[in-house]
Image: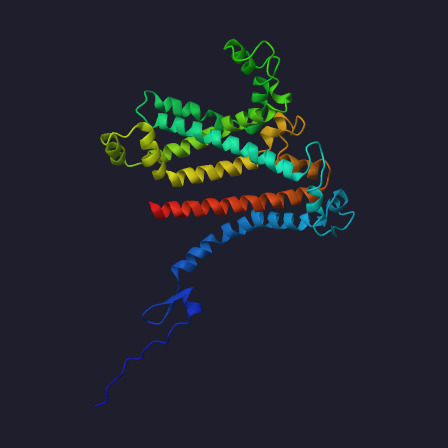
Length: 328
């Protein structure tokens, strides 16, 4: 008596299997992964249009002679190798070349992020306690975040005015300064701290909210165990709280670095990069090269160097964050 053997389905091609799945009857259906990818296609196309395309255009312009004639179409862009980059590293302006502007930017970013983090952490720790009326304080602390950067710049410019600014008046009443007021915005030594103060005031609420969210996720039993063991507040903060919220800290610091590195409006409206280029950051340099000198090639070159540096910073922070996640 002949025995019937069950016909086995053919092995599915690996390429097809990545996009389609086959049921027991041999029919093909779109895989869940491929369907999910199709749903993201519109978003990917938008990102390519608004992010990738300008980046590629900027890289292209940075290697070309791209002035007002080239932009208006009266002349064709001419390939000039690395001239836009080399010209930026030659001495120019009051302080020098793009290296000086980069160092000024780093100085601004360092102090702005450091002050944001320290004050933001202090406020987050305060609001994480059973403080009476903490809901009201949370709302008040968020107010600077809702004010446009233009208004913030003009507000602090008025408050820091050496003739009628309220900051000098308060410092004078407290006995911190003599009758001769600080000329905040016209002094090469005080201009950078002045714009740092304004930038911190504008962005502090975001840092505070992020750190507060991290603090609220800390296991209360760990804090109680540390208290029972006799740990002080600073010991608990250093060995329990901060290690637990490290991923939140890293992401908050990374976002703060990005925001301050591209800070333009506040610096431009308060000091315009002066005095004596004391606040002349890369964002100011890129704008003036492109829209004041009409050297769009050099402006794009600054943007490309800017992009490379921030990419390196992002990779470093991501690696630190990944190691921190493994240790948790």
